[in-house]
Image 1 (cartoon, rainbow, N blue to C red):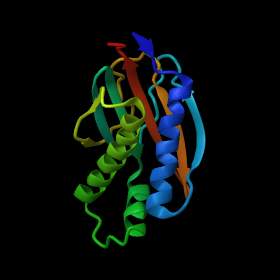
Image 2: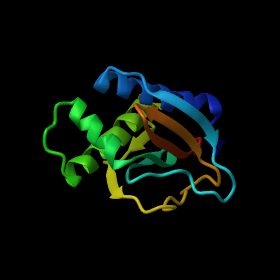
Image 3: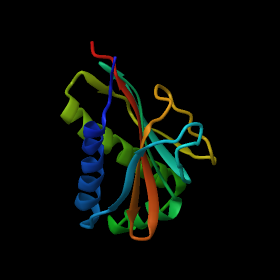
Length: 156
């Protein structure tokens, strides 16, 4: 097994920047990219999208954001009705886009699932493969969100 390293995390940071620039024409602020600390839960918000990773890699990629941020994103895309289902679709689509960009970098040996979405209770996230997943903190407008990268390379 080989670890996903710091250099690899830039793939996810670039995917986040690209998504926000494409959808909102505004660059998000990357507030930090770091390893989660010990037993502390990675930061999650109201809604989370999860993509399961398989193949030569295994684990999950999560995008978590507050409801109000997702609403603002949908409004920037000229959506007028903002139901919980639409917000969950949006958080799943963002997670899917980020994982899809990573797949382009890592190759077809990285399988990605369809998005799973959830209203996120506080302190919900339990890592699947890494004791200390990578966390990328994002700020768009005045809203914080996180991308959590819990992946390992099986080196097949």
